Amino acid sequence: MRTLIQLEVMRSLRNRRYLMFTVLYPALLYVFFISAYSGGNVAGGIPAKSYFMVSMATFGAVGAVLTGNAQRIALERKSGWVRQLRLTALPGRAYTFGKIAACAVTTLPAIAVVFAIGAIEGVKLSAGQWLGLAAVLWLGSFVFAALGVALGYAAQPEAVQPLVMIIYMLMAAFGGTWFPVSGSLKNFARFNPVYLYNQLASFVQPGHSMNTTAAAGMAGFLAVFVAGAAYLYRKDTKQA
Image: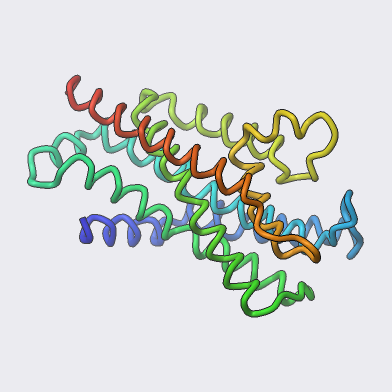
C-alpha cells in the first residue's frame, strides 16, 4: 500500500491542473478577498486576513481531495485500471485507504501556500497555533478524501466531474468559504461538512478553544463517507 500511496502522490504533484486549481487558485482568491476588505473585519469582528486565510486553505484542501479522488477513480474505472489492481494481491481496503491517504497528503501544499501568504500579510499566530491549525486542517481533509472515493464509485465516469463540482460549490457557498455563516443559515450549516471544517479553526481566535461539536461532526461524516466508499467499492467489484 505504501508504494500505491507514493505513486498517487507523485502523480498528483506532477499534474499542472492540480497545481493551478488547488494551490495557486485559492492563494489568488485569498489575495483578492483581503484586498477587497482593505485589511478590515468580516461580520463578527474577525479580521478578514485571518478569516479568509482559513477559508481559502480549506477551499484548496477540499478541492485537492474531493475532485482529485473522484475524477481519478472514475477514469481508472473507465480505463480498466481498477480491474487490473483487483487481480493483484492488493486488498480492496488497502486500495481504498491508499487513495484516501494519498489525496490527504496533497492538501499540504494548498494549506502551506495560503498560510505563507497570510503570514506575509500580517496574520499573527504563535508557533503552536500555526502547527495546530495546519494539523487540524490536514486531518479534516480526510473526510473529503473519503467523500471523493465514494463519489468516484457512485457516478458514471462521464457524469462524475459535473456532479463533484456541484457538490463542491454548494458546500463551499453555504459552508462559510465566501462569507461568514450567520442567522438561520447556521441551522442548516451544521449539516455541511465544509462549515464544520472551517469551524475547526476557531480555536486560534482570541477567547476560543477547540470546537468539539465541529470535531465530533467531522468524525461522524468521516465514518459515513468511509462506510459509503467501502460499500460502493464492493458493489463495483461485483459488477466488474
